[in-house]
Amino acid sequence: MIRNRRLNNLIGKMVKNSLDKNGQVDEKKALKFVKVLKSFKSGLALASLIEFKKRLKKELEKHILYIESVTEFPKELTKEAVKLVFKNYAVTSVENKINPSLLGGIRLKIADTVLDDSLLKKLEQLEKKLYE
Image (cartoon, rainbow, N blue to C red):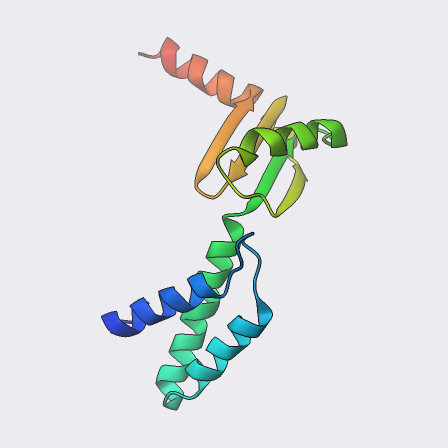
């Protein structure tokens, strides 16, 4: 992270303004901001570009819905999951992941929110209650 507060604020505003209303990157705006950051002195330019890329990636990940399940997740249920999450988040893409360690059920993740309805989670909660 860059220590200069004004530069940090500037990069934050650049990231915010690089995205359109749907959470997708507006390439023209992002490239314009990259050119501005490249115009800084070499060390500061490199650090600023790295920070810009890191924050932009983090912002984009806030709009990806990750679905984990033991087997291939059906497309019909994927649509239902997107509808469920879309009430609070702008979902731009969905990534399915097969995770046998869940034992059953699903785990949804978007931004910093995790909805875990897996058998593994339920067993962990049961184990916790048994040892209380």
